[in-house]
Length: 77
Image (cartoon, rainbow, N blue to C red; front, side, top):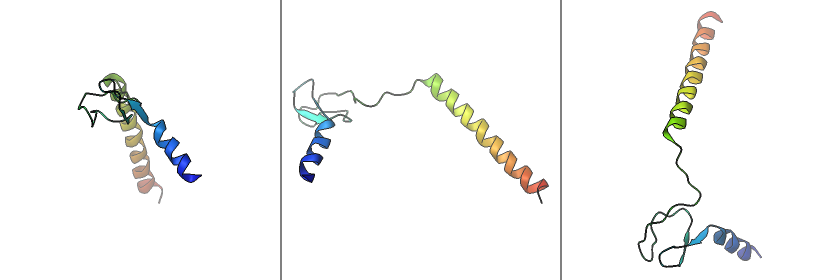
């Protein structure tokens, strides 16, 4: 029973190669059989504007948390 379930879990992550038709894993960038270029199915790179905005927000939150800890250490004692 366990063997059948793991096989179907593996098969969920296979897609046919558009060049040769053989089953390849969905995260591969090159077919191991025909060396054709593949587009990974589950991965879409984030656009640069969105990545930069998230980075700025994370930096602001990080610096605010660090400043709060420093102020607590200085004035909290």
